[in-house]
Amino acid sequence: MDFLSFIHWNIDPEIFSIGPLSVRWYGLMFALSFILGYNIVEKMFKYEKENLKWLDSLLLYIVIGTILGARLGHVFFYGWEYYSQHPGEILMVWKGGLASHGGALGIFIALLIHSRIFTKKNVFWTIDRVVIPTALAAMFIRLGNLFNSEIYGIETSLPWGFIFERNGEPVAKHPTQLYEAAAYLLTFLVLRKCYWKTEMKSKTGMLTGIFFMMVFTARFFIEFIKEDQEAFEAGMMLNMGQWLSIPFVLLGLGLVLLAQYKYQLSNRK
Image (cartoon, rainbow, N blue to C red; front, top):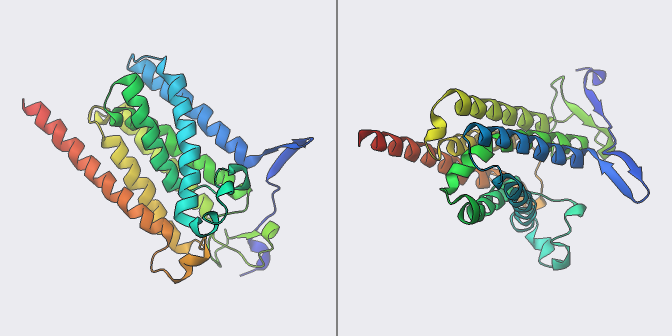
């Protein structure tokens, strides 16, 4: 394979800076995901004639849940050996280190609290709507990882392999950020169609279940060609990302089956 046929990737993760402040691609993608997510949920709330006053608090809870959950997930799932010795750095998000599994747990807890305080609805009613833009947000975040030249795959001879020059990589690696981004975009499109074109939104928990199964099944298989994020994963049969994905896939399957069962049961009455 001709070395020149690979994609040479050397994008600066910083877009521009003003004094000590800098705007980075990752931060831009993160912010864009929340802006688009807000608009998508707002459209659904208007369609269902729900209280639009819930939206601002919902966004706040999701932002806090995402950041805290993803950070603590990284700390406890991937970096506890380090952070147990440096507890003062646990909340230093700007130093890097976020875990999507922790983010998912953080969002669930945040929405559980929000549902009890504001909507007074089953928490899965809210999550069914939030997971649609969340899938799109996950896509943008993985694109942010690409701009950061991080979380990529093992060596590949495929012509779309990326040589991450900023990291000093001499060979092409799988652009697993793009593989995951594509999987999450597909998840978004499927969930969007399920919401607008089917009755699945009436089956509480169904869309959440589909989200978990699609996102974490993709994550599980892509991990096979992804470099280990931490040294302790080297000797594991499955890496940490895969072990953490299995419960989410099973939970998703359970939610789909339960939602369908409850829907059929209610229609018999």
